[in-house]
Image (cartoon, rainbow, N blue to C red; front, side, top):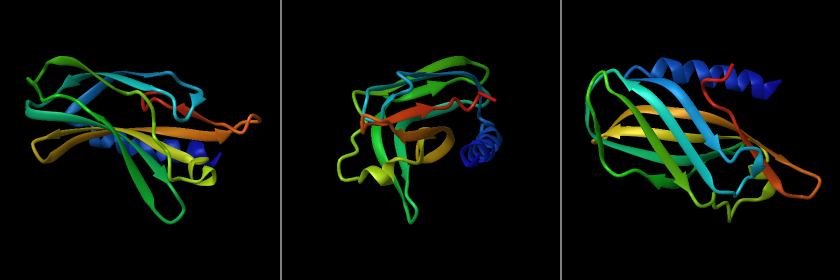
Length: 150
């Protein structure tokens, strides 16, 4: 039940932040797979204000009891969007590299973050709560939740 409450609070923050963009669809692939697997995120959105020097960053945040650690996963080429435009961004990485973390630090709720900056200014961060659990085979598996899911 803790993860559901966490999801709820993150979702409301995410929706409050998404003023420059209105999210219309989020696809996460593969899902319900090993934590280190390839990751592809596709976000469809409507642009509410023009963005001239946009760059998307894909990150994974490990949420440990004492601190949070960001793992950079990828970055888009430069993008620009006109106000009113409907657009899609595709971000991905061949794997989530978690060397240097102990399994108990990873078997927790983390975040997949897709952050759009315009120059040096953060426009939006799309936060996707990621539940990581250890299965019987000893492997860590991830489930990434779309911020649009209820």
